[in-house]
Image (tube, helix red, strand yellow):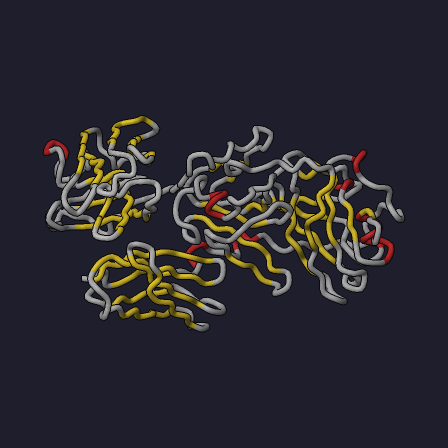
Amino acid sequence: MKVPSGKALWPAFWLYRKKGGTNAEIDIVEIVNNQWDSSLAPNWNPLVYHNNVHFSSSGDNAYASAKGSSLSTSYHIWACEWTDTQVKFHLDNNLIRTVSYPINDPNTGWGNSNPANVLINLAAGGGWPGDADDTNAFPATLEVDFLKVYKKGDVTPPPSSDIPTYTLENNKWHIITLPADPGNSNTVNDIFGDDIPGQIRTDWAIFNYNANKGEYDSYGLYATLKPGIGYWIIQKSGSSKVLDMPAGSTAITAAHYDEVYLHNKSGVNTWNMVGNPYPTAISAANIRIKTGNGVCASGCDLNTASSNNIVNNQFWSYDGSKYITHSPTSASTLNPWTGFWAVTLKDATSAGGPFIHFYKSTAAKPSDAKTFSSSPIRNMTPPGALANDLELNSFYGISSVSPNPSKGIFNFNFSSAFKGEVSFELFSIDGRKIESIKLQKVNKSFTHQLNISNKASGIYFVQFEAGAYQSNHKIIKN
């Protein structure tokens, strides 16, 4: 994470638990910006970091601090290893401190049988950092690129070296897919959260085309992705970013992949976003279509499917600036990570709804039920490029929470409209759900007022959800 510079700022990354009358806290890092080098004034560069273990409310505590170069100029990786008998602190993959304690000592509260909550927050002011003044530049931002939690013995192996990476250019739309099975690490955040910096729907975005509704779904961090499906993606970091699959991803090695259903509507053409599920290139000539009945019931090639008005025999990928046409006769290949448009035709529904089948090689593909002329029978025009149709700044989301801290009234301000149900869930600092609130469809921009005047003072967390979009916000009741 990268911390801000500024007087009286107090960023922290920590673990907290409370059991009975015992408070226990591991401060993986705390940085209090009133500890500074006068030669760097008035920038208030954070130079001192603290690694703390608070054993109990009675004061069995261990502290350590160290001074280095400014911590606000670049990202740093902070980590801890927590076992029954010790906590090891790491900075940028180097061990910097170890704190030991008796195994499962009830006074420390840090045995593995006592789970804890993970917190990352930025505070301003208070007894330790002091007060802000006119030299502060607000708003101040604590930037977090990724958060990972591992359990010893459950750490998954790194992805196979046979799974390639993908270079996503700055400010260019691409259609991509996944070149491997991500397993349980299948959310947008799991797969791309450590590859692309910034905030989703502001600095980068990912969309899927909803063929049933005929419109795009904007995906949030907790939407799930799968191989064989195509997604529009863009990032505006200022430079190209390399996408890779998360640890534990499995390359698809079967000669045949048949898990992608093509949406269809009776009597009309329907666009679908699909993609090559393999970590290697495949030929468009090796793609097959299978339906519930008719000439493609046993599988048929694209020309057969096209001649029978089931699936068009051309696909369109997008390379960041233009569409590329793929067909069985053009000797074209679909590379790993390549997503593309496929079109079901007017008789697809009556044929029993088609599935698209990918084959790794010519030798693996089955004999075709029927072969027609290799000439395409229609020239489908793909949708226009999205680069000029979609703006990142228009994505919906919570634009601000004010006032915060508050004596009980918090205004959640939304930037644009949602479709369907919107929900809020209020949690205590130890993870207990206190309240759930559901809203119906709302106007383009609106404010929801959350009243917790009857709750005890302290830190609370609000989780907001609308469809696949989810965000979390810390609020402080005075």
